[in-house]
Length: 159
Image (tube, rainbow, N blue to C red; front, side, top):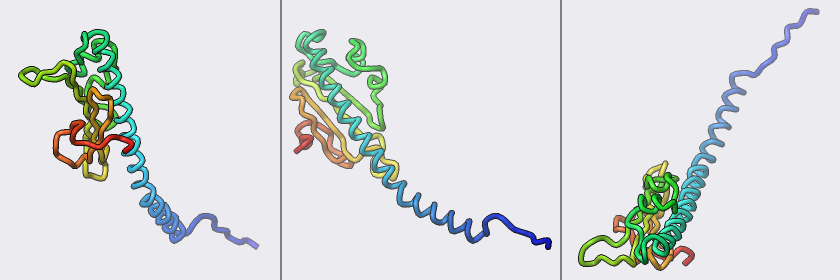
């Protein structure tokens, strides 16, 4: 008795496994992207808090009561790292400016903002933008909102 035994999977079985993997991927990928956006937003909020602390420290130590004019000044005093000083971190763009020159110049004011680098696409880096000023309150607005972000145009985090 010489019986041939065939081991392995049939083509149908392999196609079923590939289809199941495809279904699982179709369910998991949008959740993964949403998790990444949420992580980016959490990082942006924490970074705006860092900028608020750095501005307060700068005003109390180096600035003589005036806030830092930009991220480079904060980095120059060792209050923020070089990654944040570049203005880009975790899918967000950051700006922190003291009150500008001119009639409205006030060295006791500043504005730090965080804006997503990509909005409204499948690979969006965030759905909200953030801002903080000398009050220390962090505000948010929808990233799709085209008005300039300021404390007056946003909602306080936690409200």
